[in-house]
Length: 307
Image (tube, rainbow, N blue to C red; front, side):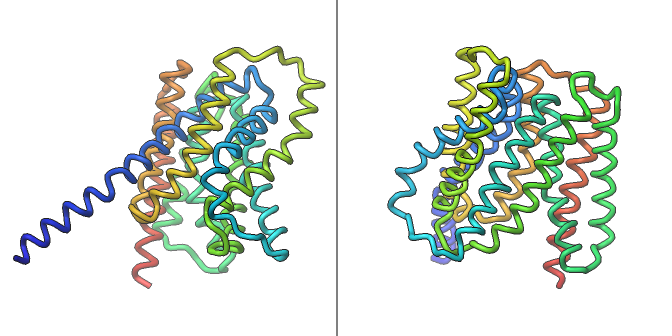
């Protein structure tokens, strides 16, 4: 009897997590490919205009899912939500879109992959506590990978300027990660996502108008408009909706582990969609960055369990 119950319970768990796992994998694939899509699209659509168009579309598509969960916004939460919108959307995507105009999708994906490790380092500084030696060594390994990746001559298609802009996106997201705690649990996740998208598109609008007036861009091709639809529909609207559904079903640990595949998809997307070259330097940098990030995350988790 006990064996039957155990087998039945296992099958139920497997069935209940199948679609959430598919949703999470969908997010990893489209988010990973987004680096190549942005890289291609910003050659025809100005970076601010691309971001604004993306979030107009995403906000419209996300609203039907959000309206039934909407809660009134308390006065004391307005500034924190504004800060979330600025750091998590406006500043982040301004750096990312401009960065991918000047560097490759592979470089962009690998640099963004350092966010978890950078967040942990900043958290340690904020706590004024030392890091475990494993985490420090992991940070050094990842940093060595970054130096290999950005040094001149490693990748003729990339530029140091574009790479530095991508690090601006990393810094913006680290700030966003700490600001999230101020509104965590007060509003549904999708409502917060909708709010920060609206803030993003409103703050991108003046820049987008300025780009239209002063930039020498012509009318975008069908492929570039397809990039806008891909980013707004699949990456932002469906991506955030699916991810928010997957986390409760799979757990934070599983979904975080799946994120390790995101830069690999990003590199593959750059190679397959944009014919980017996987040089020895890029390959070695990728191994060191991803190895350092994964090692640092695992050692941090182990330290928390031990304490």
